[in-house]
Length: 87
Image (cartoon, rainbow, N blue to C red; front, side, top):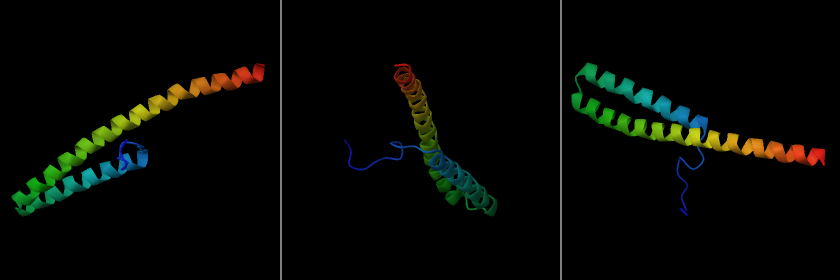
């Protein structure tokens, strides 16, 4: 496996919200550049925003997978506890 862990290996809601905040910040900066007439800078910031958007979407998918896996593991663990209590 990989020696370096990626941002999707152990996704957290906090990491997702940080990406969301950063994406909103880049949109605000792009609007500011556009309003001041710095169109090249605005385009560059929007490119960065697009990269962040893709990471955010992937992070959301990783979070959804993690939640599904956690929900799938929970009933079996509960069933095992119930069986041990009955015996």
